[in-house]
Image (cartoon, rainbow, N blue to C red; front, side, top):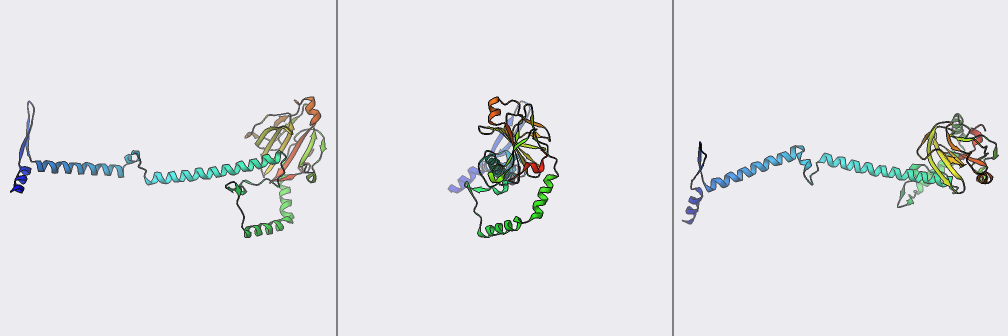
Length: 280
């Protein structure tokens, strides 16, 4: 009896009338029909919103929602930034090694950037097989006069400018660790770039005064020490024969202490005798 009463109350029709001054709108509605209508309306609206979010770009603007394409691009950018950071670290170590050599620190050679990968600040240990291969390769190339002659011949074909005028007062001697030549300074003379290149160091040291280091093509590096002033900064591009430093502003005391320009020439981390490649 109670169930029939509840059923009748839910299905009982009510007259809903909406009217204004000129029109009259009316329709019959039951409580059960109203609940069903509201539920269907909610489902329809929810379905439409779901389709909009999934199949249109609107979903990308919702907080916490990232589509697969954007996620993939984000991962690629993160990997690219990480790879770029590693390359920058290698270049920094490479330039630090060059600076150490230019400052007079004894090192075996300038390591190329691709050999400077480190883990937790320590060099990566080579395996026994890699060490054996390296030893065999070095022994084989040690007496490979053809490859050495080819490298020297290629450098000799370059037209290198004389860095400055003056007599050589001290020659190149690797046994005495004098990896360059000392050229007597002439008042009023300038220092010239021997070849096109990029300045990788422009600095002042207490022992060597102003110093410039220029990276050229074919892994050639030139070093100019004991300058009175420098006209280029790190990162500048220079051309062959361009004035890069000056010798004419040195004081009498500086001329007495360092009456010369110290010039060095390096190739792949090995010092070269400049007199072989430049007509002084």
